[in-house]
Length: 496
Image 1 (tube, helix red, strand yellow):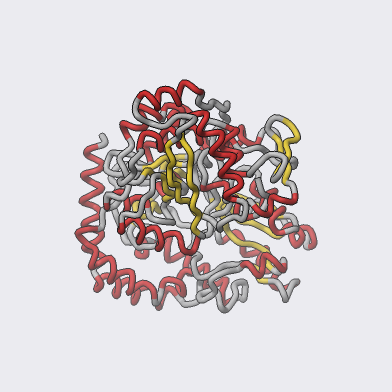
Image 2: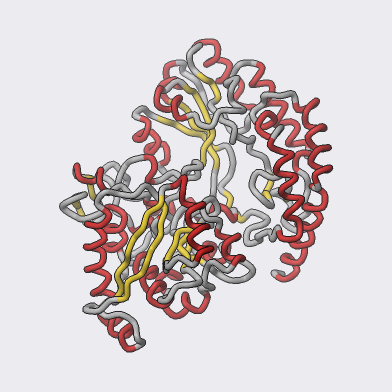
């Protein structure tokens, strides 16, 4: 398992990891014999599955795949032909291949890449309810029930979520070197407003440092569960009963947060180019930043510190909350066109329950890419540079071996973290945009001109926000909100 940042962080900075302490439980020869009796593969004549997954293609993929296939052929009469597509190309290429009927059996999908809900409704994925009951009992035992329940689309499962951190929690990350250099007290930092004293100190004492590192995708942390991410329709986090959809740009909490951001911008705490900057990676590389906001997981400070090469410390910015997007952040679907759905589910069950297979897929060949230091601890060998897979995207992360610097109780802490998560009001609801697709396109176009300037504090919200709201309404926002409310009311009634 690589220590590199991409192993654990999504390209959109969503952190994915693991959820529960599990005991590895693989298949056996009985599985392969049963498969043979049902017309499936055997150890000597296995069924080959085509598996598309996300990530930069690895030099040693074929070498590792050969070892994987020796193992899975013996276990369940199945082999896999793994095909990797890099992060930036994955969605577009998968859309083309799925539409053209390209042969595939298993494929990566998520809330951020090759959209899970959208493609499930299009019929790209096979409904998995019966297959899970027949061949996925190990998955059901491994996963927190909220994963399978929260990832249902219109009442059915169409993919297997990765066993990862279940809630999402935002934190303020700090460059610990600067915290210690200026003897700053960050223990009471939580709200956006509470950042002001420490930002002021950094601005005055460190002229070459950006106090608050943000880019054009930043938005203040607000108490809403969004119908669609980065669109102005949401339910208040405290609204667990009525589930009233509002334009959150009209909420007083939003105005106050945007006024604070504008205050920070005018004070020079935020880069003047924040509204157009696509990345702050150069600041992390140089260390010329003081704080930013990120999604966390247990021991994330250690992970970030290893990635950047200097220490990081963090404080909570919000509570752990289970959202649809956190449940659907990494999933494996079975193609609706698969010729071998039962074998695909058997493979996914083994991948999520068998530590030997899971670590081979993740870290490569023992003795070549890594060496084991104990039963569940490993360290990378030089050849690991030729097989550096994105851990979060490959199933049950909880089965992956620890690195030497990881605490022994790492997965127990993930379990506690998951138990602390509270469900968001709309957990399990997925909006169907079919009836308002024209309005959604118009609203999306309208918001582009003002969204980033408002959210980054670049403009005065008291002058700019009313104009933005007016344009959104003219584009059809009220019709979208009415449609969302209708769907939520029906969903709420059917789930009572």
